[in-house]
Amino acid sequence: MERHAIVIGAGLAGSSAAERLAARGWRISLIDRAAAPGEGASGNRAGVLRPLPSLDDNRLARLTRAAFEYALSHLQALTAAGQPLRWGQTGVLHLARDERHAATQQRVVAEQSPPAGYLRWLDRTAASELAGWPLAGGGWWFAGGGWVDPASLCRANLARHGAAVVPHYRRQVDRIDYEDGCWRCFTGSGELIATAPVLILANASDARRFPVASHLPLRPARGQVSHLPAAAGSPPAIVVCRLGYVTPAIDGLRCAGASFAVDDDEAGLRAADHAENLARLELILPGYGRQLDAAGLDGRVGFRPLSPDRLPMVGAVADAALIEPGSAGTSLGELPRVPGLYLSNGFGARGIVWSALAGELLACRIDGGQPAIAADLVDAVDPGRFLLPGRRQRRAAGTPR
Ligand SMILES: Cc1cc2nc3c(=O)[nH]c(=O)nc-3n(C[C@H](O)[C@H](O)[C@H](O)COP(=O)(O)OP(=O)(O)OC[C@H]3O[C@@H](n4cnc5c(N)ncnc54)[C@H](O)[C@@H]3O)c2cc1C
Image (tube, rainbow, N blue to C red; front, side):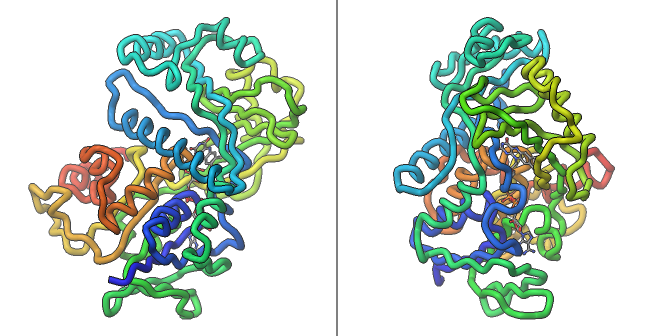
């Protein structure tokens, strides 16, 4: 088979998949309706990179740990390759929500004994000292975490292998079809944009516009981030989270966020959402935002591609049309797949964490090779999971997603 793939979407998902395949010698035709990479959800000035541990070390915890570590090595490799990536490994302080959560955070550290460079618990005094701000309580300290400018990561991914990635910007794919072993992507006026044996849908929730992917439970979740004026060198110089986040000052601004509303398509900024972000900020850095007027703030709106179980969707697209309604006992391995059609999607609120590992995993699925994660985690992100009998029954019965 010709080692040529089309990727629809030049955000974190598409650019990471393109980079990992190009590293293996593939040619990539990259299509995006925007004029440049990282113009969709991946266009915030900065977002947070950190894992999410849990007491039972569940799949989300294991996956975010693997993804966090993979992301760090990927960012370091891009930087070492001379790519003008913007990120800061400042550390991330994840404050406990309340007393109960603080006790859980401490138990996680006591019972799992993670390396101190990965995770430590800090009490209120130590946390406040680190933040340079009087905080309401303590929390987890991820010394290796930090902030990333996601659009710079998209650009770095796409530039890393030079001419291997051929971009087609300002082109919206309205229709795809599969003929003679090749996928073809067309504009609304019927113009052919690209043809290749492999097609990767990394176009966020818009993937559902294509009938072969319309069964996927992807939903857009609107998010608004607020930009707060901040003097260079002012505290905190680390990322601080508590039911939201605030970054260090980057080019004279901190990012504070973020609102979260499913199926809300308003693209413009809303003062009410800035006010919500300032309320979150009050929980994070008491007093910091009291002088700020929500009506006068700038910011950015994006639409996260949300997956119902908060795990990404990475792998071959299952052929829903070939699955008998009511068929029992089907496993992921037995699901029929659409030839040459793959997905890297559903990153929700964690695209910075997921994207590099998702790109690598997808490249392994397409090109062969051992994934960097355990088999049960590969299954956990398989897009076919939503077509397994138990899931279908729950959805048919109206179980909340
Ligand atoms: C306010 C906010 C705050 C966030 N904070 C964080 C954070 O702190 N940490 C973190 O890890 N994550 C964060 N995220 C989540 C992260 O940004 C997303 O998970 C990630 O950007 C999703 O990447 P993507 O490539 O799937 O989608 P996108 O970046 O939206 O990329 C999809 C691309 O597909 C293109 N496209 C769509 N349809 C078509 C079509 N038919 N034809 C051609 N092109 C098409 C779009 O133009 C777009 O460029 C945040 C998101 C938001 C909105």
